[in-house]
Length: 185
Image (cartoon, rainbow, N blue to C red):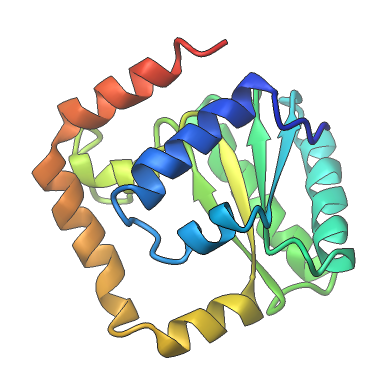
């Protein structure tokens, strides 16, 4: 696992964060952390579940030990391309949180190039609110999120607003954007 800021996966992810997540305001809390450089970008080239979980455990421990880092993105550069295998990883990573005693302290958000919300059409634009250039686990401090949500007006409206904006932009917009990122090497 590396934490190299110039790794192509990190470049793609930062561009996606800047243009989609922050640019479209899918996450109204991301800009502050992006600008303040308090996001850790960790890359992993494994596709093996046990090794991936070991690396996620390392990143969880790093986050716990470094309060100056607000959040971590664990980016899988070659593994977990299958959405079903990725969902297995997400399930096991959530179990790992419990095993490590971090449930309630850190939560995991999931992003994948082929993300599909349960019950949604695979081609639906709403899926792009969670589609990223590469399979990614987002490790989030729950206390920080609670603080932000406490002062944000109507936080429960965020997902609905994101879906409406994604549908307004349309699938073609997101496909073209992600295809452009794939040209970065």
